[in-house]
Amino acid sequence: GAVVSQHPSRVICKSGTSVKIECRSLDFQATTMFWYRQFPKKSLMLMATSNEGSKATYEQGVEKDKFLINHASLTLSTLTVTSAHPEDSSFYICSASSLVPFFGQGTRLTVV
Amino acid sequence: GNSVTQMEGPVTLSEEAFLTINCTYTATGYPSLFWYVQYPGEGLQLLLKATKADDKGSNKGFEATYRKETTSFHLEKGSVQVSDSAVYFCALSDSNNAGNMLTFGGGTRLMVKP
Image 1 (cartoon, chains in turn red, yellow):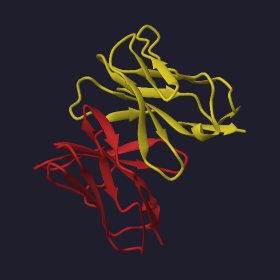
Image 2 (tube, helix red, strand yellow):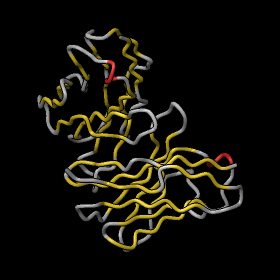
Image 3 (spheres, chains in turn yellow, orange):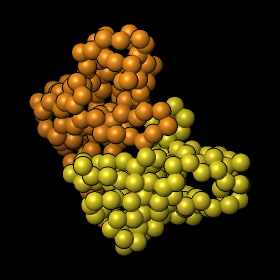
């Protein structure tokens, strides 16, 4: 079946630094990928839609300058959390569709 | 707008008990419906899906039927196992959106005790 790979699975960073999370579709091309954020014991909230070759579309309330999204190829989208703060600590997960939406393994970000 | 409502957990069952997790939705058009499962510390795995009314999705003993008249997609399993302990998410994909952006329910935590 279709596989979406996300890396890293866990990352701890210091406040003020930036962290890049990669999302790859391994056996299919994805012109659109989605980035979600999951707070502890909560559901997934869509952050942004990543569009290959064009700017990402952000959901209301999501800071585009803080959460930089790049979708440079049909198999790779990256989410960079810039100038990270402890409140950015969360579980971030991407998805891409090959007939149905598949999800990456998720990235647990902890900002200390 | 689209929305998905599912029963709040946690749901605690003994092994071999019958499971039902209710899910209802609001959507325009004819959405596709999904159940995803999330094991501790992991991402989401597609459990089953249905793309049109009266379709039944099934996988690993789990079933859900797309009921347009009641706008529901309840998840059922006849005999749960300890290994089924996880968080279950009901979700829909609007037929009008490209790339299958999903709207999720709040998630239901299932705990199965031996």
